[in-house]
Structures are given as C-alpha cells and as structure tokens.
Length: 575
Image 1 (cartoon, rainbow, N blue to C red):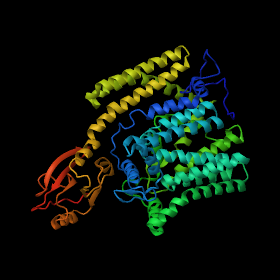
Image 2: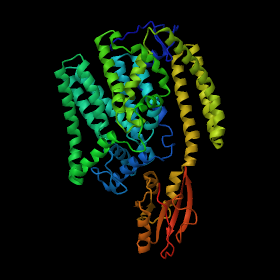
Image 3: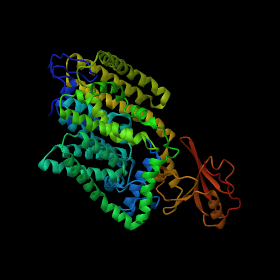
Image 4: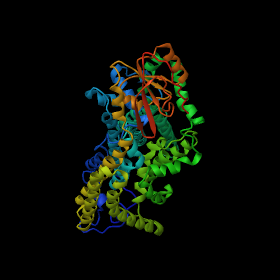
C-alpha cells in the first residue's frame, strides 16, 4: 500500500475531528473499520442498503419498463441478437443489460421486478469493492473505505442502483475500464497484459451497456494520462490503442450479427440519432444550459456534497508529496472534472449522464476530506458539520416517526417502528463512542441503515405504490383478455403497463386510423385502453366502459368494442 501526505498520529473520524482514543491512539474508528475485514463490511453495509424490499418501489418509469420488457421478450422469443419491445426491434440501447436481466430471470422462467433489479444491485456491490480496492491500494485503507461508502450511498447512485436501469452496470464497467487503464500504464510484464485485457473487456462491456458514453470518458482520461502520466508517451498510446482494439473485438460479434439482421444502413441511422443528434440538438426532455452539470452533480452526490470543501486541500497537484500522488490526482480529475466539462458542451444533458464519474468524485472527496494540515476555516467547517450531523441524527428518529402521519397514516406501525430503530441505533452509537467499542459503532451504523431502508420501503414507497398500483392495474386488464388477445392502445404506449398486462399491444398513434379500423369491422370484439384526458366521460360513443382507474396523475379507461358499433368515439390527439 502506498503512503500519502498524512501521518498516522493525526487520525480523524468520519466527520474529520481529531481523535485521541484510549484503545489505540493511532487508529480512528474509520481506520479500524477499514482495516478489519473491509470488503466483508462493505458488502454487508451496501447489501443492507439495497437488497431488503428491492421491489418496494412501484414500476412506473418508462425507462425501467423498457429494460424489463425487452429482457422478457428475449426470454420468450429466444432472440438475443435483435432486442424487441412490443414485438418490434428496440435498438435505442445496446443489449447487455437486457442480456444480464434475462440470464438472472431464466431460472424463474420469467422476468420479475425483483430479478430485473437484482443485476443493478449486484453491480453496485461489485463497484463498492472495486473502488475500495483501488483507494486502499493507491491512497490508504480508510480513504478507500470512505470512498466506497460514498459511491454506494450517493443519492443518484442509490436511485439508479435500485432500479432495472443501465446506469449501475455502466458505472461498474466504466470504472473497470479506467482502473484497468491505470494499471496498464503503470505495470509491467504479465500484470500489464492482464490490465490491458481487463480494461479492453470492461470497455467493450460498457459500450454494450450504453454505447458511446464510456469511450468518451475513457478517451478523456487516456488523453490526460498521455500528457501527464509520467511514462513513455509512446507506451501509453500503444496501451490505449490495444485496449480500444480489444473493446472493438468484444463488441464486433453482436454488431455484425445485428447488421446481418436489420441492415447496416439502419444501424448507422440509429447510431447517428443516438450520438450525433443528442450532442447537436436536445429534445424537450433534456435541453439544459451549459452550467447544468455542476448543480446537478451537487444534488446527485448528496449527502456527500457537504464534503466538497475538503477538495481545497488537494486543489493543486504540485503540493502533493510525490509524482505518484500527482499521477493519481490527474487520473481522478480527468475522469471526473474532465468528463463534466466535455459533457457540458453537449446540447442534451441529464444528471444520470454523469453517474459513471461518481466513483472518481467519491475517491477525490474522501482523499480531500481525510487529508491533514487543513486551514482554520476548514477546521471550523468540519466542526460545524460534525455538530449538524450530531443534531440531525438525534432528531431524525422523532421526525421520521411524526412524519409518517402526514405521509401515510395507515403505515404508522412501520413509521414508528423505523423511528424506534433509528433511535436505538443512535443510542448505540453514542454508547459505543463513549466506551471506545468500535464494533458497536459499526453495528449501530448497520442498524441505522436498516431502519432508514424500512422507512423508505414501508412508508414512502408504500404511499407511492398506493398512487401507482401498476401491478394490480395490469392484472385487472389481463383478466378481461383472452390468452392470445392483443390490447389496443390509442395515442400512447407505456411499457411498464404492458409488463404487468403481459399481452402485446396494438398501438394506434393516430386516432383517425383507429376510427377507420373500427368502422371497417376489423377491431370489433376487442378491448381498448385510453387516457381519460383523450376520451372524456360520455365521449366513448357505443363502446362499453369496462372500468376506470387513476394511476398517479393519469386516468385510464378500459373500453370494449362490441360486435355492432353504431357511434364511433372521437378521441383527442394527445399533446
């Protein structure tokens, strides 16, 4: 393990305060935790944060619905080359996430919300270990441990890591490719070869997850290392080209098979639409100003954004003690800040586009926060933050227990119970700190995480499930359909509804076409689902209203088209 610019006698706890412990004056609680079975502790901590109540959040996102439905259709039709959505080719995202979901769901015979989200959770657990390993090896044990905790518990990471979306797997594969690049540049012999292979395979996997995002980050980082890496520039360039070549070989088989199936011209059009057009022109959902990413990053990193002032201590690489530390600084800064700056020039922006930089930000934040020789203003900030954390952790159990009666009074048992668990955890932490029992402090942390996750699942997400009863809604629709019957949707399509209906949809984007098809007699004795705003009460003509349902802010009406239709409905064109 390499050394850094701090001394062991100047230990700090997780909020940065100096310690003088009777058990061992040279070890803070964080150092003790990080040095005693650190990977097992991290897996337990992150596993407790993600795994319990994994399916508590209702499936109501179109993006998440697309992932699980594409994976289900892969399992059903056995076609793992051309992803399909509602029976049609779906090529807006590469297929690796759908492949992984399909493989995890194969033993169950079908994709479920739980099997769809499990790959994201396991990706976060693997990422936590990878970040801790690199931080431990290159910086020190407690910096790596704290960075891994940050990477797992940042707000945006938790959001995406708890869903069947591509971001968690993208973070893991991108991080693997960049850490592989780091060691491919610095190692020799077999270790260099192994690092090149790791980086190439990981980069290829990242491309198969989300196309060009990972290569852009890789190129930015490699370019900076080429300039300041402290090694032969020719060697760094050759290593980078080898990694890019391996990544291309990893992606090429699927690209060739796909081109043979859908045509190379269509594939180029999709790439151009997903890459060039997104950079040059944004849609109404992701058009943002140039300065969008810094505040988005602050929000996504919460609660760890409050540690950003610690970056002041490592702001200048020339002040770091050796060339190794300077190389680490440039590597992490290119990965994090360089990517942020480059992505800011793109017209289309979303906070999730930066999520693969979060491991680098976590390592930088942990490095800066645990550094020594801080100025007086930063000492005062550390003390203020420590006091705020103390007051907040004492107040939170009571606030949580009281808030349940405003969020969902019916869940009072779970809300009060979670508040009691949080209070017990806080009391255990205070007692463990007083008697210098570090294992009790870690147990208190685990208990607090469990109480927080219980509150999230049984109170907040339980209320969301009441507002979005998607699963029951889909089953109610399916109960009216024959086994081989297709549901009609006019003006709209939601993959997350189809996931629970488990029937193909016939989609009419133009209401006039739908009316013409009814008049021709081809759609009689069928069911149609419409948005209530598009077909107000009383405007259904001679179609029979089967039931109405409120899902979130949208109202839906299931209609039946009888064999004899006299008055055709006039459906409004959706905005």
